[in-house]
Length: 465
Ligand code: ADP
Image 1: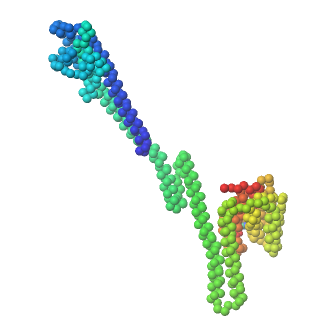
Image 2 (image 1 turned 180 degrees about the horizontal axis):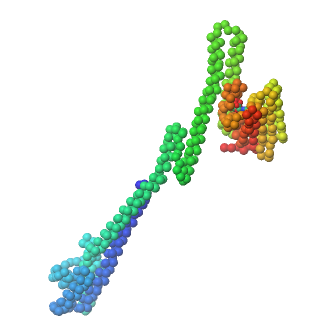
Image 3 (image 1 turned 135 degrees about the horizontal axis):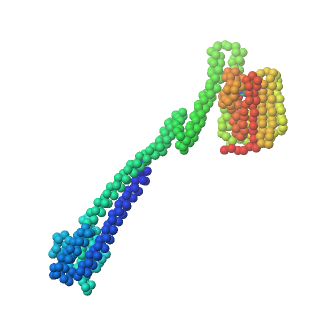
């Protein structure tokens, strides 16, 4: 507000000052010009009347007196007639007759310094204007001095000044109010954004900016709120992730603790019991190892495309290898494995990571399909993308769970899925891998009927940021 006022108020003051000086100068120089003309007319009238050659002539003197009185009345100024020595011969005020006065303007007129024979005396508020009087031989014999008051100019100028002061004050007031209002309009939204930002930097992620209107501030507010939402989500995910990891590791650790304590407390337990308990402990350790190795795999994927080892990979061979590994398990459970390779597809990818991603899908399909069901993998491509579809006739996934199954540690049926040996990280690994290859994955599923996971991968790898 101070800046705005300075910008508008200082020029206004300068403008005001300049205007007042110009007005006063204009009036004064106008009056000087008029007086200069008048004094010259009076001087030439006296010159023509030849007054100075007949100083003793009473009738001439009376004529002169009346002329001067008339000029003085007309122009409302005082007229003095002086001789070469400064003696006042005639005074329209009749005050100084017979006295000798030394007046610079008169002196200058007597010396024909016409330019300096007129001067404004601001302190006395008068103008002195003098002009020489000549005789028949064009010799200077005296001078006329006109003394005019400029009080009226001062009065007019101060009237104008008062009006201007009033206008300036009103303008300043109106401007002040406007500036105050505008500064509020400009500053208020910024202050509220700032206070929200400060609260957020103190860790209050739930803070949001209140948005009014559709101006640039509103856009800034929207962008900021979106960013805040993402940050809050990231923070929540991080907390959830840490608590999930702790929980996943705590469960097997508690089992190990219970198992080992119960053997230690039993004196002389049979060897068979030791063996059984150690087997259980061993499988809990395996479970922890699986969780930790899956987590490490995810951490590597989170580091982005830098860790990828891109080569040309044959998807068909990849799927055949996965099938070879799964045939014994599928056979045991009487699950039919079908591989529909529509065409041979080569893509640029990190073969190891991609194989593990697809393997997670096929493992899940077998794992979540009851005995006697079937699992089918289809490999196809167009000129840009490869498509890998893994379908099963298994338990399916409820619609409300379909959006969350790619989240880390998310399991539809917590207890049952843990029993199946899954870590809840398989689909998260698959999702991250596919995304790193600039592909996409989606699920189509119906409860108790089966699921299909459709993966799309660009044939040519484009390295992202
Ligand atoms: P898990 O190691 O538990 O299998 P995943 O991340 O691989 O973890 O899968 C997450 C969850 O998604 C599983 O716990 C399961 O509930 C569900 N799921 C995954 N694949 C299938 C499928 N083919 N059919 C039914 N449910 C599935």
